[in-house]
Structures are given as C-alpha cells and as structure tokens.
Image 1 (cartoon, rainbow, N blue to C red):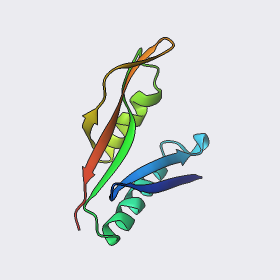
Image 2: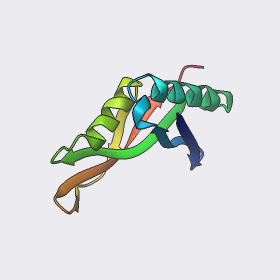
Image 3: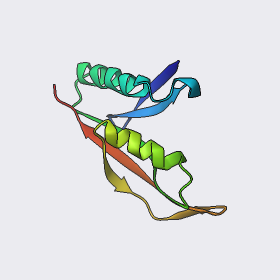
Amino acid sequence: MGFISLRSQDGKPYIGWVGVSPGSHRQGIGKDLVNRAEKEVIKAGSNTLRVETVVEQKPKDGSYDQTVKFYEACGFKIETSSELKRYGKYVYRMGTMLKGLKK
C-alpha cells in the first residue's frame, strides 16, 4: 500500500521517497510511514529529519502543493528554498523542509 525510503547526506537524515497507492490516499498511511521513519531516525541518534521537494510552484496544479501540505501536516517547516527555476510553463522553487524530533 505504501513505502518510504531514507537516506543520509552530510550525516543528516533525509526522506528520499514516500509513495502511497492512489486508492489508499487520505487513510493516514503516508503519515504512518513518516512516523515510523522518525522513530528509526531517533533510534539512529538524530533529532532532525529533512526532505527535499518542490516548495513553490506556479501555476499551481495540485501536485507539489499537496506534497508541501502533507509534510506541513506531519510537522515539517520550510528550512531553505532555492532561486526560481523554469520547466515548460511552470516556475518552481526547490527547497528543504525540516522537522525537529523529540527523543
């Protein structure tokens, strides 16, 4: 029904990918996967978790807007954002979202 991957960059844990079967969206599976990843990151000794994603997109089409809303609902906040880039009709900004974890 879903999966999550974790990676390390410069000694900092990051979420790599989160995927949930479309028929299983909005059932709490994604949040459960993030919660499980957080527990593993805490066990490994870290008190933060990050994810890199598109943090701004114009025109909005519902894709990355929903991604940012999902991570915000999980307690992440935008930490950094890059300069605007273009892809076809889209203008977007990559960024890092961060969540502090309680041990």
